[in-house]
Image (cartoon, rainbow over all chains, first blue to last red):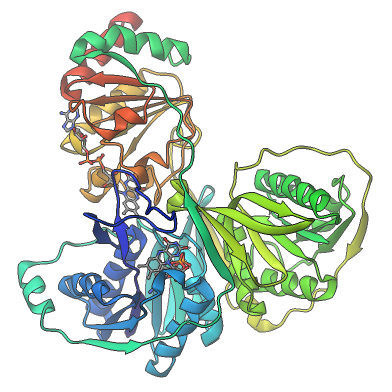
Length: 249
Length: 324
Ligand SMILES: Cc1cc2nc3c(=O)[nH]c(=O)nc-3n(C[C@H](O)[C@H](O)[C@@H](O)COP(=O)(O)OP(=O)(O)OC[C@H]3O[C@@H](n4cnc5c(N)ncnc54)[C@H](O)[C@@H]3O)c2cc1C
Ligand SMILES: Cc1cc2nc3c(=O)[nH]c(=O)nc-3n(C[C@H](O)[C@H](O)[C@H](O)COP(=O)(O)OP(=O)(O)OC[C@H]3O[C@@H](n4cnc5c(N)ncnc54)[C@H](O)[C@@H]3O)c2cc1C
């Protein structure tokens, strides 16, 4: 099996967003970087497929040089190869452009399974995987939470309110993955050391004309007024009062 | 024309579809245009007659379309766009709506703005949209350069309004599908085994985070839930990643979106990716030992203290009150 997994470097902003003065981007001063949980799970799934069925796995990102950090994190966990499509103006790529660059880069490589996140952590466009599948003329199942490979076919499951939807498609195929498909491993110390030596294949990509153009970022309204109910167990009577107010008791 | 793509769920229009119709009517009024609704799937014809307040209903009703068959639906929507030349196409920003519209956008090589929350119309033309980023914790204003404009609407962003306007004309669309359009198709539905009240239906949700410390500790949250009406237990990503709870219990950007009357957050710091999943709760009560924890800026009620003392004391008091 030849497996591809596409990831995207995003700021790791648990505490809240600070925007740059022009409101065009998230201020990343003193902020670490991560990939979406969906993509972490896609990386884990790629490693597991190769562990079970043999073959190789490649992690790919379109982004800045610095995204080498996220590629090496994936290698440290067990991915075998990496590719960086280097774009300096990466923040202004739209999903169609990103999909086109990815499709062009991977087309000659003949992957059997191409994994994406269901949606990216930041822009949440829900479409790069679907667009790549279309450009490569491959079947695509989105939002999967289970994947099994048998005789060059894939059985993928989606979880809905009503239950598990089961899909079966021939390989090669594209899947967009949701967190919950597995529990990602942590890299081993040895993995981290050896990941430093794995070469990253790099090429520059240029942006086609955009269809979507960002004008500004803004924060949604947050309007809650905090009332402190008390310290420790002394707060219990007040908590009971609030539970009564909502009819919970 | 504004083309509104509607979603059929259990022989009825989904809630999100009514929101799409509301948004489409508003856009039509502001851009001096009309609304055509498109219904795809087995049983679409029967539903068409229930729609009011749109100019036309286009239906693609076919025995083979008995579930959401992504490429077949995309083919039908794409050919409807080619045939009717709408200025704007809007669909629900649900899982199926986003999947469908991504396929349509890919086929037609058009831009697609997903999960829109607001529209800016100037001089009778749609100029910009606001869409949700980071699962809704940040908003992005975008301009769409390609035409027709493809959009999906963030669920719950615009309250659905019924319209009793005139009865529309109904037009059956030809359904021309190839074998390839059926290459991705649901083979089977395995009904969910989940018992009890689901996170999304519960009136009270009790969430546990890193402060719980173990899978074992969640038992006291289960016990608390059992003492309340209509309550369920949820978790943060730290708790699910540590294997304390299954991922289906996770609340947040990459987990469930909940909207209970009360959310009780225990040992949870209040990271934006968690809070975006519970921001529609009517009230949020946080129990955290750190008075500086960000959750206290995003909650209605705060208890500063060790949850391992507060929760057992609360459970004991509820038991005493109930006499159990
Ligand atoms: C570091 C970085 C930051 C950016 N920040 C923003 C931003 O805040 N807002 C914004 O609108 N645009 C941003 N962009 C541009 C944005 O990535 C584009 O709109 C487009 O590349 C894809 O949109 P998406 O990631 O939301 O796609 P989605 O369709 O939501 O992504 C689905 C999946 O596609 C894959 N994927 C997406 N992008 C890449 C990539 N660059 N490389 C490899 N795989 C990828 C991932 O597997 C992802 O889970 C950023 C781009 C980069 C590289
Ligand atoms: C793209 C993306 C998507 C994400 N999606 C999700 C998601 O869907 N859901 C989600 O939850 N997270 C998500 N995360 C992770 C998120 O950013 C946070 O890391 C996570 O929510 C933190 O979980 P926590 O509050 O349990 O842990 P922490 O942030 O470590 O907080 C623990 C809190 O417990 C308190 N505490 C400790 N001991 C006690 C005690 N004895 N009594 C009382 N309080 C105590 C501490 O003071 C602290 O405030 C996502 C992250 C990214 C980047």
